[in-house]
Image (cartoon, rainbow, N blue to C red; front, side):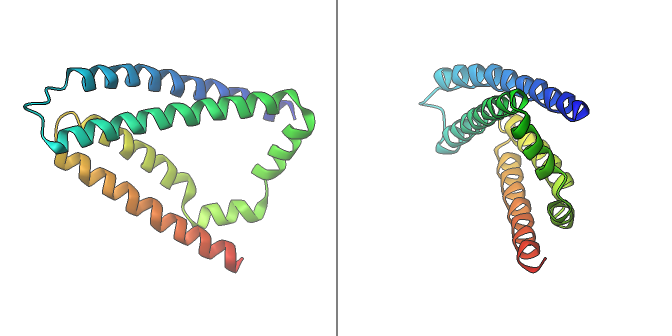
Length: 151
């Protein structure tokens, strides 16, 4: 169980890093929103800036929630055992693998980060990446729901 405890501690460190990055990007996004020239900005520019800010805030909030949840889990042995059992459940592992969960999550996060960065340079690329991520996650969710019903 000590190996799993160190794994959970590593996750806390990673989530803390994500929260820190989200905080820095959030301040930069606020600065961008304040300095956005409203006379020269189009509706699409404002939408992209707001969407980026929303994504950054949601990433930060989810990272903080994950930090709190994992910190409470580390201190309680029964919660740690429940988390261990949940993560090592063979049925759920099979369903996640059939839905492509490991790779879908990684590619979706990378595409969202790319969309946030691309939004500063090209709006068309931003929209394309956001639509691609939404489609990818929707298909994965449908496959996961199908597998949960049939397995």
